[in-house]
Image (cartoon, rainbow, N blue to C red):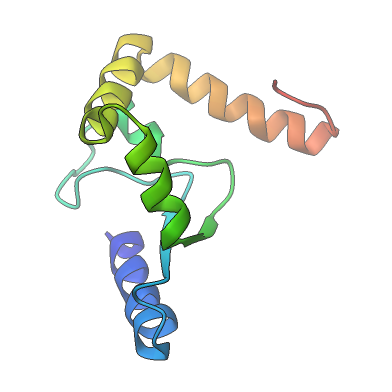
Length: 112
């Protein structure tokens, strides 16, 4: 829940308030991020679409986001397809892949 609040605050204060609302957007990823702000201890593999080994703030150029959206045949379907794929993998597999990223980062290796 705090991640959602931080995201909106950053978007408002760091981007929109400085006149960059039409040019930039912020996307946050966090190791414990959840898709629903109302999820209390509900495990959903789809949450891994918002997770990263470490907290990350991505600053995106709006023009690049729009170009990617226009180039994709079904951009509106991306979130549901991602969620379905992660749910098919299962929460355990998603957890293990994220954990492997942490292990690789501390060992200096690669998970790809």
